[in-house]
Image 1 (cartoon, rainbow, N blue to C red):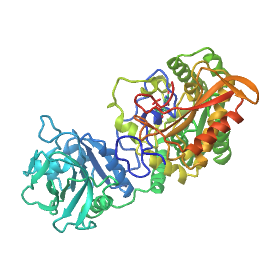
Image 2 (tube, helix red, strand yellow; image 1 turned 90 degrees about the horizontal axis):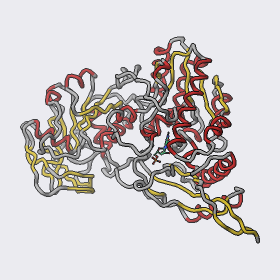
Image 3 (cartoon, helix red, strand yellow; image 1 turned 120 degrees about the horizontal axis):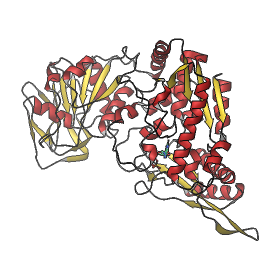
Image 4 (cartoon, rainbow, N blue to C red; image 1 turned 180 degrees about the vertical axis):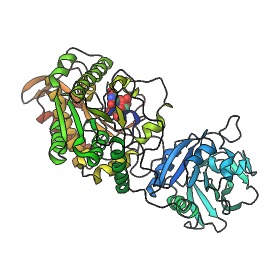
Length: 556
Ligand code: XMP
């Protein structure tokens, strides 16, 4: 079994979104800033969905809440706590959820919600910190009792409540709080309590205002999703129409409206995001779309064939396949420094894309596989970065394209469902993240055609065995690394002097932190024997057991 990555509370099937890798999967890193994207967070075509706003008070829970709401088939958007009530209401939400947060409501500068939301008539649900804000801002009392509750905590339902209707009178829920609500505001009913939270749930049904000290969004709260559903369906009267098939329909309409009869171009990498974006745009506008697949020669084994098979043969797309392995190899000869490798690959990719774009000068739009987490996080990320890919580059501004970003409202798990519904092969839809510079950052030291061949062959075995063991979807990334040393071995009666291969397999939620995957011994044994027997030039297999931090996922 593979243990979960350190930290964070992950819902089932979660943890598939990675901001940096997400954007870069479409366009490898280059030097220049991204083409500016339109400001509005919501793409066109989304008016038909009832919307619930999740106000972010700075905990890791806001994204989780938003995803849980969407799992209940209601569209949700995350907004900053600094947003005014007026601006929130201009989005015509059917409900507002105040998330948890790391601060105490009592510290100076603790974030508050604009109190006007409580009188807006839009139902409000406060969760954890959000519940304390509801209490505090409406005249109740929150105290530093000195007795916080963390983890599984027994909850007693003490009064009939539409919100808690699905809950038994006694059960464990997930708590994570230091302060506690000790007095409900006037007009509120206390509906649940726990040993150290006398007011663990409160509500004023008439005003449509609710608060729960526990976390209904985490899997460790057994009926948590029912609590959210009660808020969404009963308190907010939301229609559960956020399904990926309806999203496909509305996106298709929106793309058609946006591009009309103009030509569109798309950089296709074979990764999940660009593949789903391309398939969606193709569904909308057919052969108005041209996809450009740049084969750098640094892709995984069989990847170029798979892109050809899927997009040209299955989807009948207009696909420009640029076979540029020699060009990249020539520029990378003797380059050892990882950052130079990235820069060369990013810039060469851009040059090639520009060349193709010039041949398609009638294209006015560019498809980009930007995901919702990229939008949420853009501008708020820490500026000091470890590798240049985290400052994701893109195409130069002077290319003058308007962006088509059909996935900008979706989380990664939603993107995968869209991909499946569009008929993309499972291999693409469930593909692990792959760095834009490809195998170049997994070949430590010089890149030669021979070393690329060795790594591709070893990597294919890793993927194959991990799949056979049924671990592929459970592991964030699993791959082979080729270091710049050779070691002595003996095969038959012969001395060998050949390369080792290092197996790297990690679990993670978002690539920001990772743990090394505890692969079963039998899988490691098969990997070792197959790689040495089947890949000429390799005589040793080692396992990387470094977490991130201190290591990074890639070796370069
Ligand atoms: P590290 O190695 O920094 O990687 O732990 C975190 C995630 O980013 C991917 N990665 C890249 N993606 N261009 C990309 O598009 C790059 O240059 C790059 N370098 C690393 C890596 O595979 C992991 O998912």
